[in-house]
Length: 233
Image: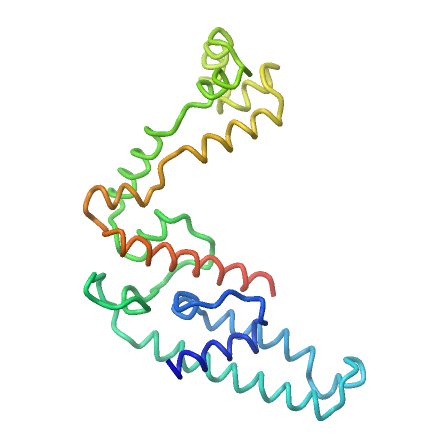
């Protein structure tokens, strides 16, 4: 716990106190993110910029040393973590980095299903099955439009015939004058809210327990937050 507290404090020094810290955040901390944050902070407190920043030279020196120390602590953590053998999910084990260590994840935000695939938790065919399952249970925009009084059945039939050639239902309905842009956005939002979560598929098929699903969701969130931090700086 003392080591974890030290890592959290180092994160606060580099990333600021507004950052949401967790074990998952430490699991997905990247060397590139640490380097980027250090460079940005160092520019703000470097002793040569004391006059510009309004701090004394000694204050800037102290802050710069703190940054260097925090950077070193986090880089040592990343190096140690990356040298730890990757382990499979086991419900009997405690929560934390031991569930899955990131290996070769792309520097981009990942939807949960693709995150599971890139982590090696599921196979590609299982991802495709999950996406098909999710799509099949998703309410159709036309049906939602009828239920809200935006469309009638004749309009839906006309839009469907046209959308075969032109593409998406919402875009076609808007181009034909049946729906406004605001109504299309509302229908898409309602559709998104009512669709099944893809993680539920893997639980129902016995590929993940609910405990494992919760942990992996946290890790996916932490990965995406790391990507946001990387490109914010």
